[in-house]
Image 1 (cartoon, rainbow, N blue to C red):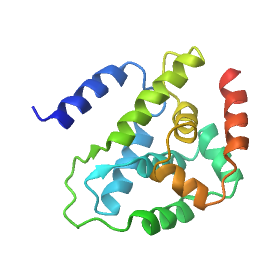
Image 2 (spheres, rainbow, N blue to C red):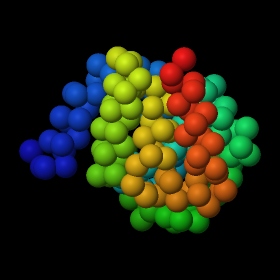
Image 3 (cartoon, helix red, strand yellow):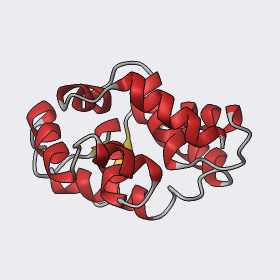
Image 4 (cartoon, rainbow, N blue to C red):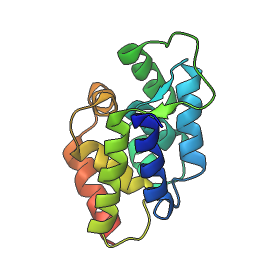
Amino acid sequence: MAKSLMSYTLIFAYFNCFIQKWDAPERKRGREECLRLDHNLIGTEFILLGLIAEGTSASAKMLKSMGISLKNARIEVEKVIGRGSGSANDEPSHTPETEQLLKSSLGKAREFRRNYIDTGHLLLALIDGDECVGTQVLCNLGVDFAKIRADLRDILAA
């Protein structure tokens, strides 16, 4: 088994019992966004687009209240990474940055004593983590990281 496939399989098995609200619609939307731009890898930017596209979570509503729409986020993602080669496969895998984001979101869930990963944990892990395409997109869109961080921590602590 290839190293990246084995890594993905282990991460998926590890997170399977933790991912709850984010598991179905947001992950599916992130994958769809990846395929829409003809990419073979799901980067943090596509996780971000999936969170925004979901629309009903506290994270999505928070980003919307800051003026971040799916349309302008899509435009910014395409500016930053461009379109893929046009040969995207139906089952794109995660980038190492996305795998790290998932690991960090599990840490955030544990920090807030949750037994599942919520969209808030993912967004908090994204903005607290190393710079990646997802954070670059948010920065380019003028997001106030300190405000999101404080607001998310208040919501997750409740």
